[in-house]
Length: 196
Ligand code: GAR
Image (cartoon, rainbow, N blue to C red; front, side, top):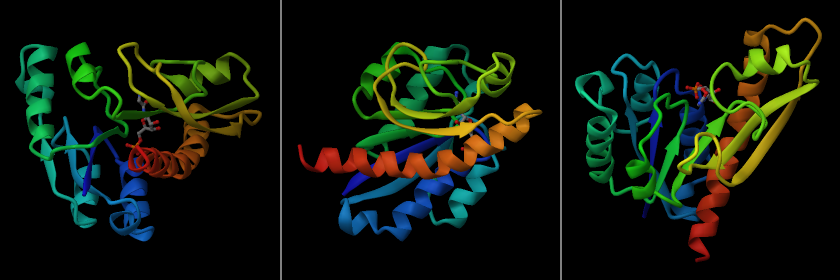
């Protein structure tokens, strides 16, 4: 059985969408895969309770307990390795990872970013898209590489930017699409692993 481990920092709605898709579409039977654990860098992430309600084991590695990014990533890697992940899925995980972490999981580390990459890497993507006068915005599922918000694009969704949009309204429109493309991209990625 292939183990998927999902990393979150906040509400965990993308994580929940992936877990629900895995359960609904019987990834255990059809893709030989399961969501083995959900990890968070914040003990107060609301997504942790959602994961537990969905029957997924959770763990917290609090970044504030570590003096350096390297120390945190080493602890995160140790916790991750306890679940023997074949695929690590970042879902609203708001920490920049060290090169060592990315190298350790190279080729099996996915992220979702709330913009149409390569436009608007980094933070505040929705306000930046509005400020730039974009007519369209969206989200991107991509492989994680050493460079922030780069790496091979696996899927994208496009939404319109409407006149008078606030960043919050646009974020909600984008997020509803994230919930469709992220489970789909993870399933597709798993299918690719199966055929290798
Ligand atoms: C999502 O919009 C995701 O794309 C974004 O955070 C939100 C998390 O929501 N990720 C990033 O900005 C990564 N740099 P969720 O916790 O409800 O899935």
